[in-house]
Image 1 (spheres, rainbow over the protein chains, first blue to last red):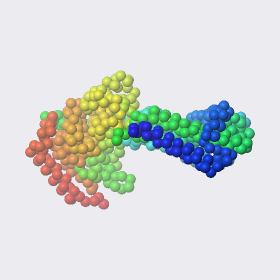
Image 2 (image 1 turned 90 degrees about the horizontal axis):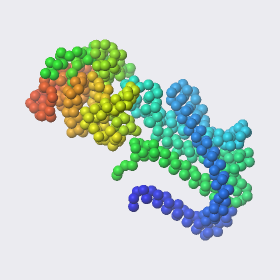
Image 3 (image 1 turned 45 degrees about the vertical axis):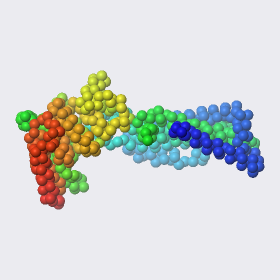
Image 4 (image 1 turned 180 degrees about the vertical axis):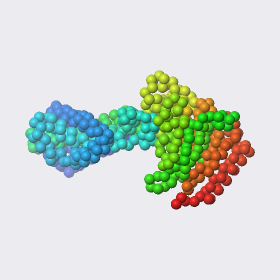
Length: 261
Length: 268
């Protein structure tokens, strides 16, 4: 069996086994559908409510991508600034760490009050959640330059700009893409959590809102269906980042190179 | 013939009483007086800790001497880079940019100097031909063997058309067969391009094969022992390695180094 085939077939097989187990256990233990719906029921609900759920997914995705884009732009800018000046980094990095450790559920209500526009408020929350990995990984990457190459550039009297664009940025690329993988998922989580916290104060249109509503109405199959959508979206986002990573690094970085065994 | 050529040539590097003491008090090098003339192939030979790399880095202006001074083409380092006064250094690590192909790696010094792309590419082609890597322009470093990566590193050094080539144990990380091949290639290059080379190694055999003159150094404290002129005309072939003359030099150098390490006293 070729390696590529196994790479797809193996997780798929695990998935099928889990689904079958789920189905059998729900049937065998006679679990009521308002507690744990079986996989077939969830699938039926997903198809039946597709219109509603898909529209909601698009709203959540809009917030996710908006936040992700902002996180990348702000994150890389901040990382460059920090690397250029030790002073700036020393003074501001602790506050950047604050981003990492602040529980978004606690400050989201505040942001939603301060930022009047509901969609923008949700984007801000999600951006805060997604920002730190980009800053942290990009700084690490910009600093992790081969000292031999730094010497080489210096001996050739390279300007700061030349060193930045021709040495630091390519050196930082693998770390940056690593940060993207983490951040994309966080942007989605941030969007969903912010909307959860916002409740009726939010846009009232995203997937998290549908989950909340389904919870209130004890429509558990729909809740499961919505959760399934979020999970699959998260996985697809991650795979998208992996794909971008491969595109940029495949020719040279150890993480992407296919080794002949 | 090369001896005549050397003594008639102008000094390229003059080291006047330069020594090095590091911040923590370690004396890396005792004061050295050394003149390297145009067209010479000078090898700094000695065991670990004799200060040969330190001396080479001083010549490259990467380290400043604690006392004494150095002169390049009979003036200061700020004139280095002017036409005819080009200096370049090759390290033990090939230090290539892994994300760039060979063409781009070799062209780097010219790109940084903002030379026109077409002119730069022409020089790259010439440099690659000199090191025997024509046809490998689109390869990535990871697709090359250690010896080939070293050749790319040397091509990158040659592309700036240097007059003075400094090499810090460049073949130390390679196997003996590759090393011998590269030794032969480097003296061919030196001869063809009329370079001045300062080469650092701890291999007696490599030093004898390559050099017009060997500066023998000892450790504890790091110092110059003696200059040994290798009186064998260039171009040299592999055959030289197995001649009586070669063996005689090897004997002389081995004894010199052994005696020095036996006598060695720690600097107090």
